[in-house]
Amino acid sequence: MSTSTKTARSSDWEPTPPPLAGPGFDPVRLVEMYQVGVWRYLRAMGCEASLADDLTQDTFINVLQRPFQDVSPAATSAYLRKTALNLFISHQRRSGRVVSVEHIEQLDNTWTRCVGDDNGDLGIEHLRDCLRRLTQRARQALDMRFRGEQSRADIAAALQITEHGAKNLMQRAKQQLRECIERKLNQAK
Image (tube, rainbow, N blue to C red):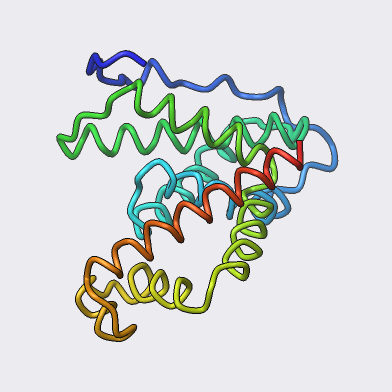
């Protein structure tokens, strides 16, 4: 991977729109089918939740203002992701933040490889299954850390272990989750 910090310009990320809308095109169905996937994609790209809400809405507004045809789930999903990514990059640039193209491309490639066209539903299902396989203590530690945003000291106190023990417990749990999810994604291919 290159370590250069080339910045993205809007023209670098302009998606090519699908052909004109045909009979039977349903914009409500389009939003219902792809909204969650676009939002999850933006979050994976590093977008804050409230900004992801706004950019997801803007993505559909932009797409629906032009002629659009829902050709296939894969093509539509890719087109919506590119539109959302372009909006995110534009927002970051207007905010004065530099966006590394290599970083964005790597995240996008990982998303496409792991999630594909199912809006992330299969990955979420795998995550839930893998979480159930962890010990109760590991689940509690991760829940306290990532849902409760509690410190390692608080987690250690609640579990009656040292801070170092809490750190090791969470590292092992995250590694187990990563391996379990990767194994399930590879089996699904």
